[in-house]
Image (cartoon, rainbow over all chains, first blue to last red; front, side, top):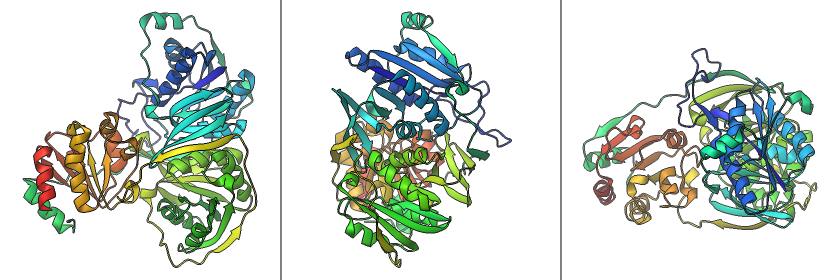
Length: 249
Length: 309
């Protein structure tokens, strides 16, 4: 079966975001951008399914600016077979993204779509669930284990309080959580090979999707800053401070 | 505006996460609740007592027993024909169901709201809480998830909601529940505890976590937490994790022990009322947010604290 893996180009997770002084957003000029870490886990999981002989082809998809090609090349270097860039300079919301992925799923007929549970820039945690709604497929979100078994897949999910396993009929949607796997680094020969793998460029209009935003960002501001308190000299002083707050056994 | 609030429950009782959502919903308009599950009479009765609740829709069906979004989302979408906003807690259950509902309604969801600024305007964290966005919806209906620590909890008594059975929906047959490993514990739940004692990588092993962190938590009747580093190192199970990718908490007192204070951890606990940090590295970023900081070797300081508190 084919596996579709959407990937997003985001501010690198090691870079501290800076809010722009005009309050319009976070400054993305001249900062390191990388693949969303949860999406990287999705690419890795697809590759492992291919190595097990379950997946036959891995298609990486990204919706974003021309530079998102770099993110797709990373996915190809890790082991995806081909890529589709749906090119747009607009910020595309999860609902419109899900509509684009639905159109691609209709055309490609994958057995699984594996997405990151959320992108670390807008932290929406929506696209996978929305795609599941639009396709009418089952969803296994926040996955920490994925086991394909014939025409179904067992997904172990990280839930509040522990783990839960659900059985989903294929085709299905999976969203990744951190402990699903540890993504591999692309080797230099594979990075070179990735340059000649096929990468199609499309536009949202090619899929008939209107990407006009439904939600307007009024402003973006710094979070309230918590100021440092006091350093206590020893445990006795800490105990006294805590007792003053009413904290004791 | 008529709102519909997802009641999170364990089949026996309403979970605390629901109460903050009721408060958020009451800022928008009339509050109706949805109790979905299998054998949920007691939960529905309890939910009707929550202050400010108008109507409690009860969908009692085996297909709703395990919160499978494939079965629940169509039920909610159906009820949204007569409501203007759907609100769910930003728990793993709420996050699993709400976007599926939103897409069925062709609505763009607003996730993890921190405040209600107007009938369609909300604040929410982006970039792991490093920025706060004020956003305004242009959709006809609203689908929201609510960060529980950002709203007061509604009172669990004083309400007199009318209970109404909903017959819609059933099993779509595309998903089923296989099993769960939920930790059973006498301790308070992390997200509702008044005091949390969290340990970090500096502990070095699960044995040391047991030896140093657990006795302090026992003495204070506190919940146990951990940093992502401690979880990844295998000292404790993953549901102990406090942080952007784990649980978001805001207890009265938060003890960060041997935790350096990475951005992703701070995002999960910086709204705690009082933060106590114990770390031997005086330059650790955790001290920049701590109300009381103690620079000391945790292996000496914490047992001493446990003895004296």
